[in-house]
Length: 330
Image (cartoon, rainbow, N blue to C red; front, side):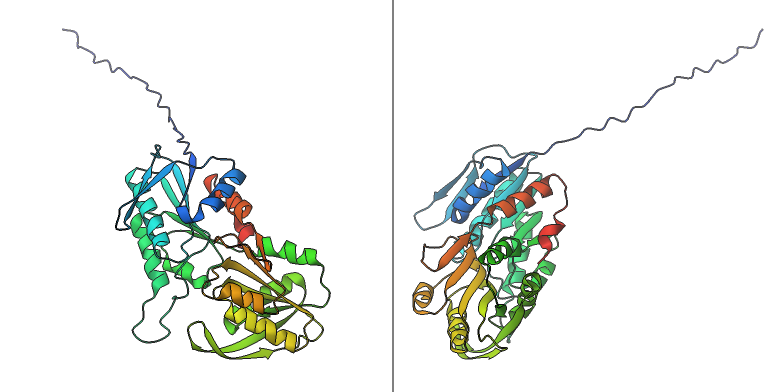
């Protein structure tokens, strides 16, 4: 017998690696408290606002519902969390609903990050609310946070998710430079804002003065002193937010008494609670320049600059994996 030769059949299989690119579409949804700002951002972005419904029970409990499919999409939810607490709750419900609807990326766009003043234990037996809010946002399902001018930079460290912290200086500086004021001086209304004031003074090539204040209790100033000379100067007060306007108006009056020609203030977030508008009327503050992170009532002394283009540009770059580092520069 002739030996049977086993012939090996070599089958050459060419394996082609097929790469499937999933193009996630960006969708923008508003929370009710920031609907006008969300509309402006979506217009600047070039994308229509997504459809979302809100229903409210008789006891005040409310529910959110997306009216379109968001499966596999990148979601931008726009909502500031200024007072009251239902604004934060609405953001949390919007995030949770998006997670359960299988959104691929959920970005909480919070122009104003509320509860940020409680960023540390400044006395015994008090909460760190900013940390708590950060954890609630992550637990709800947020995969990224975009915000502007946090009350304290270190709040970014409370998150385990990426935080894009923008600065409103890119909005304010061109406006201040357009005023063409001679003998300009930048001022901080308190010691805590000195870093911000120095950053603005460097950009404007001006001097810096600082107010030192002591509080009797929250929102009540017992004493204020001025460190620096403002005689014959046009002063620009710089702060991240204006709440009752007590600090700003007291600082403005003090500087006019010390010989300042004029006093203006730039504050990113116009909370303006309590007697804020009345204080503005009665103060020697010439102008209060704010952004629209929080809706505010029209007032003769208030100039509102929109942050819509800034957020739209950052959202566009985030979605297309482009750099946004220039927006982090004070």
